[in-house]
Length: 131
Image (cartoon, rainbow, N blue to C red; front, side, top):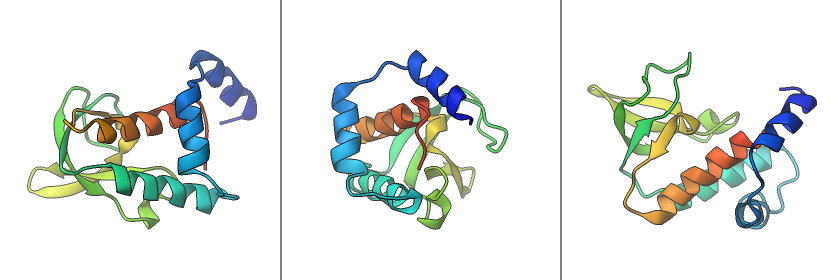
């Protein structure tokens, strides 16, 4: 994404001061590069996501077999290595587990902190931020 595209996207998604504060001072605090920001997000989500939880596919992706509206069960985060460019979670898919982008899923967990963490990631992506 070009810097101009990122600025245009940020204008469409209003800034949320509470979320910005949490991201800056809890998630990517003291992160000085891409790898540290990726690990900050990974650790935050590892701490906040209470798995398993139900989720619904909210957007189609060419790299994912999930279709909009399909319900899945999120069972874990993908490995650290798999989350270095974006966050992936493992979902039950048939008899196996499949890694899909967290951005693709709407959270239906009963735990507020799980859905807040997912919403934090959605916000980060929607604002055009990157590691």
